[in-house]
Length: 225
Image 1 (spheres, rainbow, N blue to C red):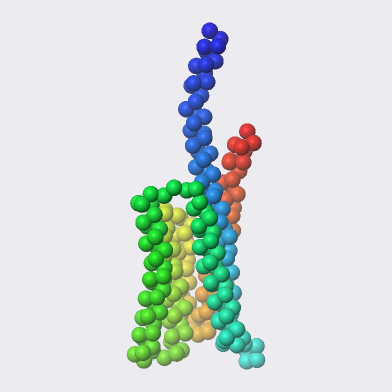
Image 2: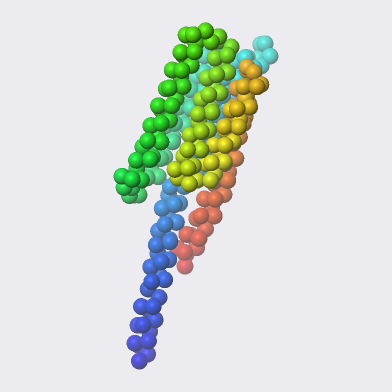
């Protein structure tokens, strides 16, 4: 009778143990995917802050303290290309071992392609405006502002797809920065975009790191137990 009751007790606990195992695996997958998010946000924050900041230094400082355009453009390009490459590498690594069906993969593919399509379309529209009389002074405001506005709207769209509230907050903030920036004129528009956008990414990166630490605590506790 004692052995039978112990056996029944083990069977009764089995569903709870299975549920705990499923939750532990879910946390592990979420932790794997989220592990790179803070690093990516910091990388983009640095790119925006110092990349756009470098472009501002072309005309934003006092005479004699300005940065040559070639140097500023090289710095900005290196930072943004580096952030893009890092995003691609870490994004691929975070998806290892995670199965995704066609329904899940399709929105991600379309979303990724929309970044490239939208950027090319904005540049093409800007070139068309230049060909029809838009002067260089206005172009210096148009291109960075509209590209940043597009990025903010893409974050909002991404938040809707993946139901990510932090991404929504970042997107709304970036849109607000982009809308306000042109009113400061050139070259201050670049400084507003650099500081506003860069600090937005860095702040969300800090919050993501805190969230990731909280996500890992129950998992680590479960493994110790």
